[in-house]
View 1 (spheres, helix red, strand yellow):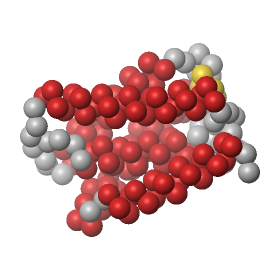
View 2 (cartoon, rainbow, N blue to C red):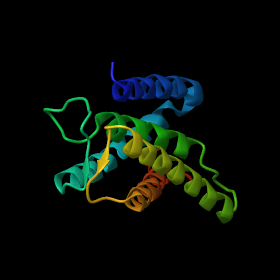
View 3 (tube, helix red, strand yellow):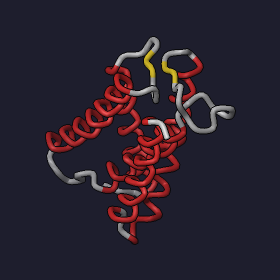
View 4 (tube, helix red, strand yellow):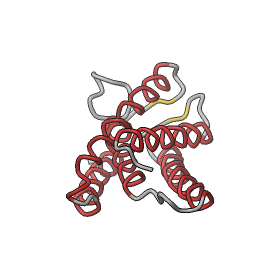
Length: 154
């Protein structure tokens, strides 16, 4: 098994374990709504980036169905977004909330940049790390606003 497929397998195993461990039973419905909404967003942005030849995913599942990375666009980012929203610091200071956004967005961006530099899971063609950061930041804002609206949270 190649290094890339090991990373994909580890990603699935680790995030499934974290889902079972970190999503409380009374928040499963919330998690599903967040996951599906984030998948919609990443589907949209992911397709745009590959169709415009901004990013390429040489090693991926379902290579005949889509040129995007199923693991990262439809599973990893949406699952991380579930954690982001379920543990969002509602009621905390604006500074705390901004820091929360910053760390989640930066963490994912750093991980993606490392994958881009050291694997064939992603190749930036006409893309820069800061576009990843901006799109992740925007989709976190959108998912958080949707989550608040859908469940009528403060």
